[in-house]
Image (tube, rainbow, N blue to C red; front, side, top):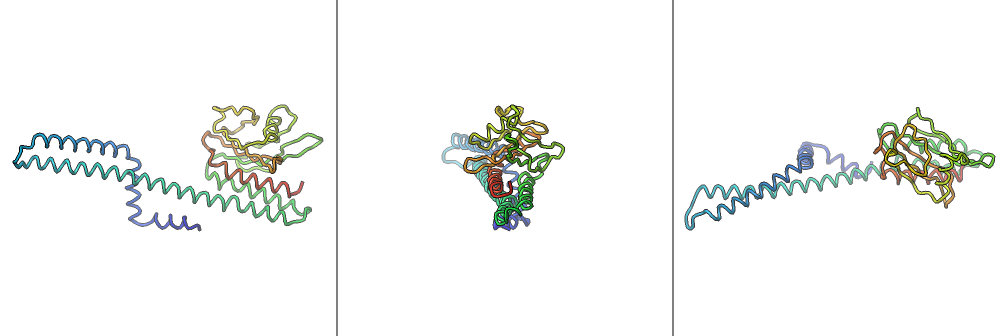
Length: 282
């Protein structure tokens, strides 16, 4: 277990940690009211100070004035404490979010990427005639990354395509896929003047990974996917040294299911697949 994970576990247990979480929750979720009360307390304290300064008889003692002076002082201190409390809780919340994101990235690297890299390394060590079985295992390892990356997000599908040429016609053939079995992915054909032609036009012109967050808002000009069963997608080219070998796609049924945070690890997996396609069986 990474050190950061152990640290999180230790700090998140015990009654003191529970009190801290309750206090932080109040500060973070009620910070608007806290700031409003803080401002109100500052204003009231200032008014009390002005009134007392203008009405206190010179050279005399007045118990009511003393009380109001004390109340104003307490309100000033309370205003400062509330502001500090809200700011400190916000800072701790940001730090916790950063630690959680770091742990998540470590888990994705360990569980999604490293097994695929091991499979490629093994693939390269085998004689060419014995690489088919290992290639299938390697593809399965990449697809197993889907639940690691996307967790319990419903309906996410990952598809691996590989370029094949049959009778001088290029095809993006489905190697395998994971998720949303009701929507079977289909091949792209370069000469179909539709989705296939658009996919190859993208692949063969120095492609960059593409994210479409919402197909209803962005009709993905220059792209010819079916749109069947999904409203958002990411397409990452499987390429090396400018030569395309295939495509890795992820799609999901709801806008917002996918984001730019998913792109880096998908690009890493696409590079892993590119190396496998180069050294693996044709």
